[in-house]
Image (cartoon, rainbow, N blue to C red; front, side, top):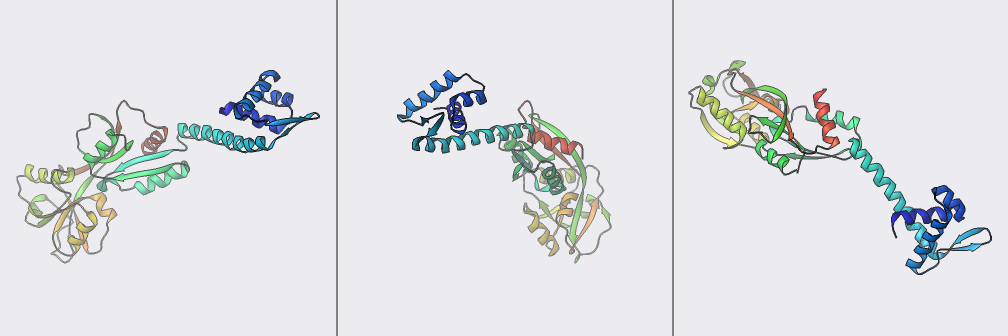
Amino acid sequence: MDIRQLRYFKTIVEERKISAAAERLHISQPPLSQQLKTMEDELGTKLVERTGKFLEVTEAGKALYKYALQMTQLMEEAKMEVKEVGMGVSGRLTLGINTFSAAGLPEILHGFRTKYPKVTYKIHQNESAQLCQLVRDRIVELAIIQLPLELQDFTVMHLHTEPFYFIDSTKQQSLNCEVTLADIQNQPLILPSTEGLGVHYMILESFSKAQLHPNIVAECSDISLLFDLVASGFGGAIVPETVIKQYNNDNIEACKITNIELAASTGLIWLKNHYLSQTAQNFVNLYLHR
């Protein structure tokens, strides 16, 4: 049996006449009668019996009708869901985010959910280079990353550029509201991230270009712990503005670093020349028109 035969049988049961069922299905009566006989032959039992002008459903027919209802309903639901996914009003948004690039994301997701309430979400947090690989592997469709990176495989939409700040404990001697890398090179520094990763490299490269030698005492990729260490007076740190907004702490003072070459750019990426689901396209469009 197939879904078409089940739909035929469901209609026969509901109309109780082959002629009425054929009219409702927009087919002629003989082919419908043949389909009923084929089903009975396949199952080895009578499904309906004629009593006067109408057909009565046998016990076997009642059992089949129950499943026919379920199957046809599932088929209609499947068609509806596929159409909704195709239009992006349903489906799943798979998104990668970098810890340093998540500012404003909850607000954006709230707006997206209001517009597309049937969409569900799968969000991966990782370092930017790893997020690029997740996009290549199609584990996520979109990723919000820190730039610069080698991105020949991707379409990149620049989101924003933000300054870096030097943060230190309020227990330490207060600095001016703005500082240069030269002002803080002798301060004990905790680098946010670890060797080989984007922010770590960006900070060290900026010191190198300025021919400065920072006093690095620690590396810490856990931002919450980094802020606790800074607040306790263990050392200062250099972080993007986004991070300060996320981890506001009354025991920490933040001073903007004025060296213009030290700035964090954030981008939204997806694979070039690959299918992008309508759900993902809708998310990109939301960013474009915010």
